[in-house]
Length: 574
Image 1: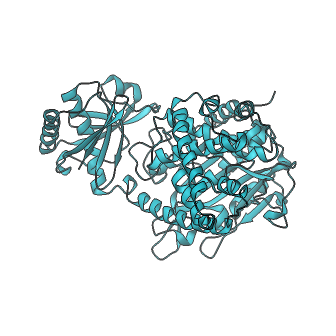
Image 2: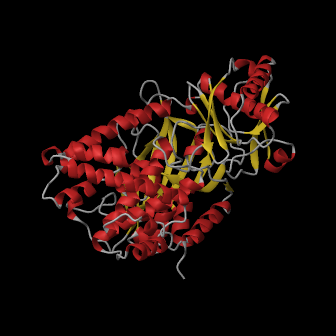
């Protein structure tokens, strides 16, 4: 019997538990208290403080399965192996084991536990450059394990080097990074497509080779003079996509035919009346991926909107709707509802039906001479109209769009967006700036003060902190009165003036809960947790950072409030 994705996940966790690892719970798909990123995009992302030296309450050997979303991969979906939403299997060594154990264990897991044919596995390594030597150590380990020399391939830093800043020359002083070793599975059923190059190779984009795992070795720290110094404690970060591993285990050249996706693909066939073949494959793959991702976001309490995560969710749903129309020739919300059981998605489809009509009307009313690449991009940005759909509609009228010009406009827009994303990354909690740290501690005072004034039904449901303001979401069924706001502000002011000590303590989860510590987020907590106490006034599970005493917070004032619907409200403080 073929191994399912769920069975593979459990086998992976069990294997690394047998090697002394502790299973840590997955982080929320939409990060809490972190304005630096829209979604959790890797298993490593929530562990960065621990990879940089902070002791982890679960120890030095960790393993988990982390749901992830990568918005930058939206345009890649449609081929045999790319998705936006996936489960990342990960294991970590925090200054414990290193290359020998990691490579030996992952090879054992792939070839013995999963029974992947050795002859179909290839590994890649860092070839070295003027600053960092070739990864000869990993090469020797792979040879000792038994990997043939012609299945070991060296690539430059663009392929086999990891740091948060990219290649070695782009790393700032103080940044950590190191070589990585990727493992690829070869689908011999796929013939090389010459449009991706004359000759196929492991990192070719033709789809014959699919990466199924990556062992990152955080080995160096960049110095002020540009040299690289070995870290005193070296870390391992492994990541392997569950979907791609399942694809390899089931020997399916098409990821969308594994057990995770196949039932949804069959449902799309049934609802659209089309077969999963030929030109229908790409739109069906996009629908399957996007609807699966949208459902996961909605389960995390996200709703479609025009900002940040909500905009990404809206884009996923609307792009699915366009593909549905491409397959059926129309967008019927009632028919579309047969694919999903999420009212939020159906409601969004109803809204988009009007936008789609507007887009079509714009095309009809616009002078043919003005329907150019810029027009197509504006239509894409405003109404979620993908270029290929605009092109298809116009081709029926004998018109042709300049695709290269459209791509150029789009790339220019994306470049501006990436610059904005970089600024967002630098400006959030990850820099532990003085202001954001003060606001973070203030959320604890606010939370307890609101419970004192409004009642214990008040529960924090999220927060977002920047250097400009604190945003706090909570469960409450009506607007706060001016009197209630004044009472809350008075309590916070009093606790700040008392300069209460802020302390941190590691303890068993159940012991913390039994002692009255607050824990309201939907995430699953590990057996050992971190508790932050503000004097005897407030105790909550939290990951920090915090000021050492409340006197350092300064003045805090509730600026405005708004309703979020369904018994949820939002406060803005500054």
